[in-house]
Amino acid sequence: MSKQTLKSGSQEDLDEILGAEQENRGFSAPLQSIEVYNNTLKDFKEEVVIEGIIRQVNDQEVFVDVKGKSEGIIPREEFKEGEPIYVGSKIEVYIDKFENDDGRLVLSKQKADFLRIWKQVYEAYERGDIVRGTLSRRIKGGVEVDLFGIPAFLPGSQIDLRQIPDINIMIGQEYDLKIIKINKDRRNIVVSRRVVLEDERNKQRGNVLDTLEKNQVRKGIVKNITEFGAFIDLGGVDGLLHITDMSYKRINDPKEIVQLGQEIEVVILDYNDKKERISLGVKQLHPHPWKDVAERYPEGVKVKGKIVSVTDYGAFVELESGLEGLIHVSEMSWSAHLQHPNKLFSVGQEVEAVVLKVEAENERISLGTKQLEADPWESIESELLPGAKVTGEVRSIATFGAFVEIKEGVDGLIHVSDMSWTKKIEHPSEMIKKGDKVECVVLAVDSERRRISLSMKHLEDDPWDGVDNDFQVGAEIKGKIIRLIDRGAVVELVRGFEGIVPVSKLGTDYIKVPAEAFKVGDEVPAVVTELNHSQRTIYLSAADYFKNHSDELAAWKEAHKPGMNATEKAKKKEKKEKKKEDVKEG
Image (cartoon, rainbow, N blue to C red; front, side, top):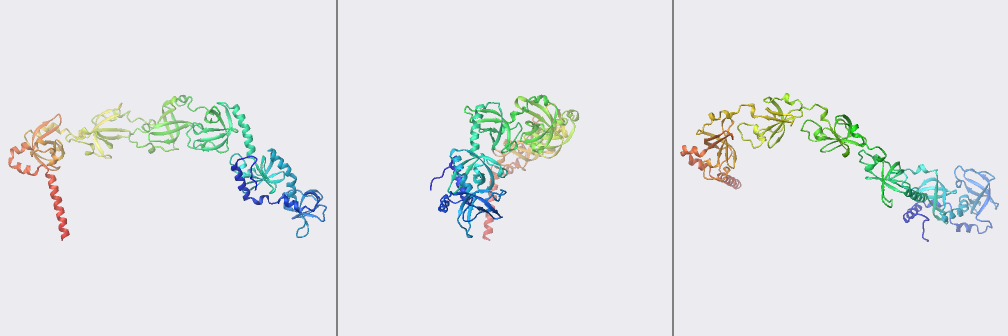
């Protein structure tokens, strides 16, 4: 078997065509080999194709007089649908069989047609001529083509340069084709439209490259679409239309702008020396939306737009195609408690805002929505006078104090030092928690710096004004330990006061830290040794107390030996383990 080749096309094309032929073996069945035909005609002086006259026509057969021993018959199906058949007209036929079962001469019009035009087909194939053919019908693997009145095969891969979405629209249309494979014995003809289009494209490519210039506007066809852009066929030359050059507006998918097979107008942005890489643009065909933006959007003007993106730091608003502004999270509400922009805005939402600032050179427009309402701080000084009592909700707590919302968009700070006259507060959470409703007093208002100082302790008079009467130096008192610190024990006293017993004044043997011998809740007898008004601290001494009550000292020391708490824990654990053993033995 001889090696099969294509007149034009790649090995990949040949493999596909051979596969399609295998699936469509019945396609070339109307004619058997020429050798068979010659054997059937060995007793005839005439050539294979002879001329006859149509004598009779019915629904199944056409009777033709070939001046032989009898009339021959041609199956009616060998004539094209709608083809006129006239009695008395001449017709070229091929003698297919001397006698059928009825003793009649069997003729073939299709085989005669093929033999008659074979020379024309072969010469066109050898010369590489372009031929005209009409696409007749779809078949497996491609399309049947009417070529010079006989069927040829057009594989699906050879129909166009790119995939055709609907081949049916081409049926019945006539196209330029090239014959790329023939087999006379099997009466098989393969044609290609793609080869013709490629030749035309190569010619166009040369013309395009010769005339291509930057900033030139050309028309092209969308050839392929990717996630980063689209390839445009400029006529034998492809250029890349990047997604960023499709539109001034924000787009996520190139298909929002272009569709496969669409004809579009583009501008040549750039290309390399060999013009192998061509950059194209569409948005550059239109005026830049940021041109004269400051005149169109002056500061202070109200604008409307659509939310196109929401981030942690703000929301982007499309004011017009390709023109966006940012509403920063700090410009969304006068309240300082907005957790995230998506609590106020969502993509697609129509919003109104105020232009705050325009930076045309940086392509930035700052917008605000809180400016649509009056600034609550503008009248706050006249509404909140120092000394006024207010109630608000604790919105957040820091190590230095708590922020209380007095009214929408207005917070005040209760500093940790203003929470109690008498207590030494380490953290605001010792007094209040987030969400609490608290009453407090306004200490100061600074509208320019947007600060309000609040106080809880100023709801009552300062008890330190009478501390000398309540706690005289030398007086004996008793209190419970509420907090242990490295330098001593803090003891709760009457009227909310606190006193501190230094570690050296606890009246025990030497200890490094009070926690070695004391615990919260222990009662401590002591003597007032100092009232420090500047530090607002009452200093106590248990040691001075036991100077006057020496009979109690031994028991005190016994109860507060260093490491006592650890010993007690060990005894408790031992007792618990013994109890478990007793249960097992029982």
